Image 1 (cartoon, rainbow, N blue to C red):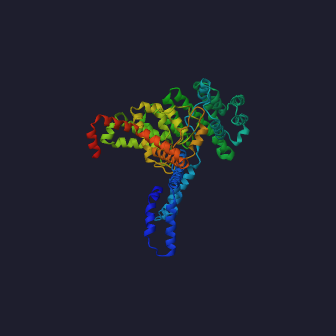
Image 2 (cartoon, rainbow, N blue to C red):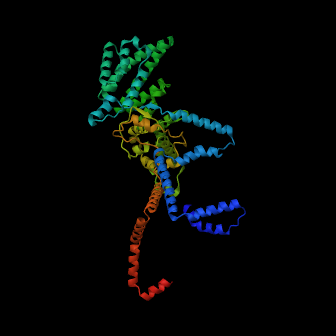
Image 3 (tube, rainbow, N blue to C red):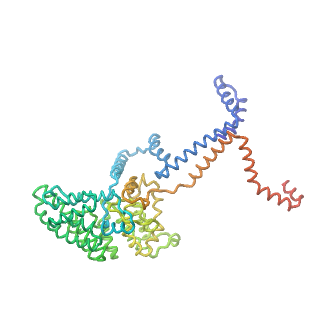
Length: 537
């Protein structure tokens, strides 16, 4: 635009001479405008060009920084969010429906604005697994935030207001609040000296036992004590709120013990026994979904390669009204990929197109990747695994680690499943260009996952996976660099015209030196008469 004004300044001179004056005011305005343009020197246009290029470069650099940090364009976001309503871009054809949908969207955003942290249903044993890792590597696999959440869970599930009536429970109520592991273990032994206390056995099995076999023995002792307390409180649960709270506590304790016993059987290779224990537990306590026992069951059934039963469990829990998890979404994708993965070839699919079964498998993978986009890098071993935390954030890196840690072997067992995942998982991001603003099959990806995952995962030796992390388009870098270079060149030309002229001549002579060399060689080889005829043409 600036160069266009500079080129058109001569026609402005002629227009000043040829324009007939319809009135004194208009003639004065036009002549003053033309006089102003005619008095401008080339230095002014150089300076103006440099200034505008500098401003454009700064805007592009800010856009680049905003894009890298938030994954979206600042100008586009402001245009859509603020300028479009002012310019009348909102469709008012159906105000009732739009208000309803906006209200639903707002409620969904509010419901997911706070990232809820869940207990990892497949969490490891502190004494037999986490502490062993610390002894071998010298690294702490659990963060203070994660262990603090576990302490809160223990106080919620294993204590109640009537604990002061039983001396052992009173001791354990204090033990769950202790930060020092040795103090907790000593308190558990003190409680067992008074009576058989189920929660004391739990603490010793979780933190003192150094092997899974020792932990299983302690949990078997805990089952006997827990069942006795459960039967006694079950008879008194309707006698008042205090007895009802005590029965709820005893129920939580018994379910926790039986679930951990089933996990011990699974870790010791008795997978069929673990499946039976989990099924019995889910039948006996169908309403206690907080422990997510079905995810333990899914993993054990996959180990047995009992895919029909896996499908039956998914049909019950992969429902629109129930909260999703990476285990549910990726297990569903694995079952659909299993039907086609052994014969899948990307070259053949590109020639003939995808079949119906292959399309269903790809859609299931896209659905799973949209729910948790961090999992594929762990399944494809593009990123190293660490021990899973005791708590996970759904759709976050912590959930991806917990899923891949236990399910990577099941994906490897299905021939071609990882190859199909490798060929198709990145296509999800083309379907969701702005995942923080709009989802496809799920609500928009929560912004707060990175902060929560950094609290749950040991960032000392693990790099937290962040989503959405888009590759920066080349044109943004190229345009920013070009504008900055032009602005700097214009500024230097304005300040040091003679010096920049010397540099320009030297640069051009260097640039055209190879061409001049070639021309000299051609002149020396070709006859002078032929060269003369060619130049005339």
